[in-house]
Length: 95
Image 1 (cartoon, one colour):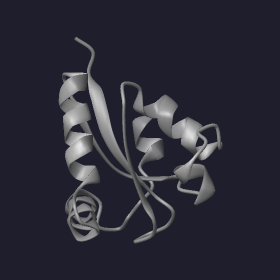
Image 2: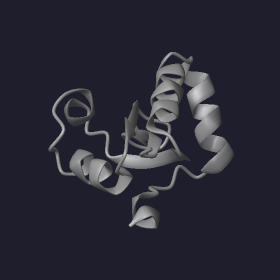
Image 3: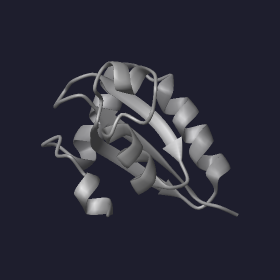
Image 4: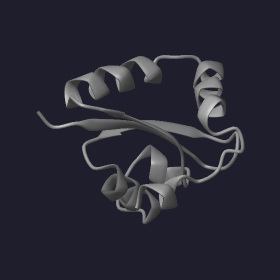
């Protein structure tokens, strides 16, 4: 089984949020940061990794992403603040 990550990117502290899932977090965030991912995150310059969780099974990560995407914004912000109250960019910590 391949593991996976659920991640949240932000345009700036307390800015626009993007929730995603991937099996390779460093690669995927690199793609977002360099504009290789078309769509919402590129349109709104969402590049700051502010939250991530690792799962042993990709299916579990996919289900978690689906759930988080349907949460109200306040719940997502609370999730970020629990682990990253300063809204630091965590990208360097995953390399």
